[in-house]
Image (cartoon, rainbow, N blue to C red; front, side):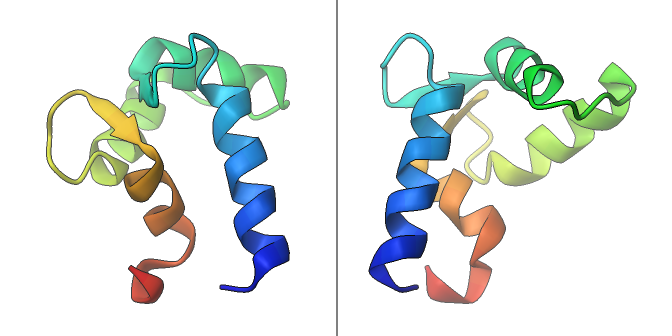
Length: 74
């Protein structure tokens, strides 16, 4: 990952992390996806969220989020 990609992903994650907790729960993820114009069935979106939430704690942190885009970079 180059510096521009890292900066872009960090900004994107902050857009999802509206409470600035360093974690994004499913409701925040769902709202952010809709705001970006990505409308999906909630159940389908939840399946994506579960795959990205690698440790299964119900929250997506930045490492999990960026790993969804650059899995071989983690």
